[in-house]
Length: 227
Image 1: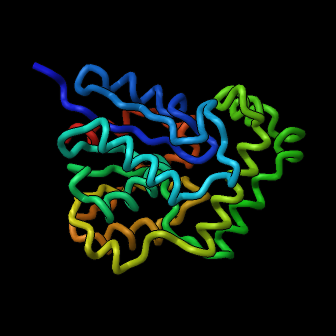
Image 2 (image 1 turned 45 degrees about the horizontal axis):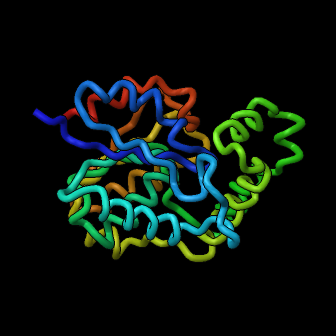
Image 3 (image 1 turned 60 degrees about the vertical axis):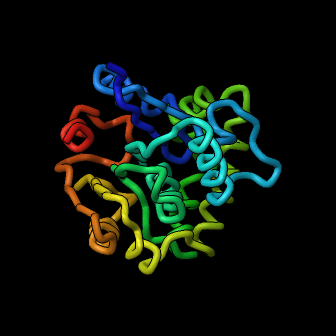
């Protein structure tokens, strides 16, 4: 019997490689589709940089070509936001969503806080391991251009969020919103409010989990994915 599909969507500055530890855990139960967003994972960065609408449109086109029935999806951080935007527009594409560490509250101020941590000179000097990680995930693209494109995406979301309370209230797909209690980039309040705004939304706290996916034991996600 063929295994059911599941879609994995990575976070900002990431690629499919970021979710490989989770993908490897899921292969015994699912046919795993671990996909890099357009312009990520080594593919050419669009001339205009990254825009959430463009990432969502590319994901929509790919899902239409790939799946004939609704599929479950796990989205980490940016991946969770993109999946939720698409689920609001095309709920028939998804059987359910699980998000982790997704930032929901986008304003110019919150975008500015995120961007303040993305100075490529500072990253190269003070967090060289992160620079090397981004470089490896996006080769042969220049890692600095990946960061600059991500900054553009964040600023655009701050000015024009693609999700609001009315849209979430109309969402028919079940969404499990997971938030780590040690996450310093995403607040409990915005995560819990988002789950409460979705008719079939559920909020879960992962005790002690930080924001970086690389610091997570993916086994803690299995009960939510396999239920």
